[in-house]
Image (tube, rainbow, N blue to C red):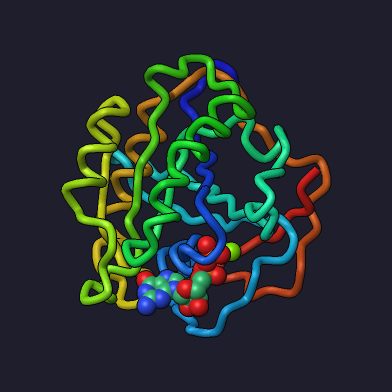
Length: 206
Ligand code: GDP
Ligand code: MG
């Protein structure tokens, strides 16, 4: 695989507990949303095939397992990422304030080869609750600008606003990092009961 173009990109989603990381992934991959709160159990990822620049690639989107509450995800979770998605909730200023530490955590643990140019994408989620907004869009735009022109979208995992567009950009950002190296893959992957059509896998993180 070393001389070929990569077919598989690893994307990780970070942000405070409750901002909607699992819901975003679920909306994008399965076009589903559930109101019910369920802390993610077990590190897992979902895969989805997308077209980027006329070629089909697989996005492997990694979700946290609830450990984000303690910021103890471990290096294996971060390593080999091609794009890091930072999520906050537009109704929760504290989750926005946490973006800095999530970014730092990623850079420290993931150790990307070119940290200055590593692609992050910021998603301000729960746009359907704009009447309860506590984080102004301009403030988030400013943060993104001052951290190396990070791409930014306000989205809703609930009504799917901007989800397709955001993940299209996330995929492109990941592909822009194209490196001639193999993607990190967990050594132990436990497949759980699933609908094979959905291409959803659950992996025990190492
Ligand atoms: P995670 O801890 O970051 O993975 O967050 P979850 O995906 O588990 O979502 C936490 C809670 O927020 C759940 O009750 C979701 O139903 C809710 N939620 C997630 N995204 C949205 C959204 O876009 N709009 C609204 N109104 N609620 C959302
Ligand atoms: Mg979750």
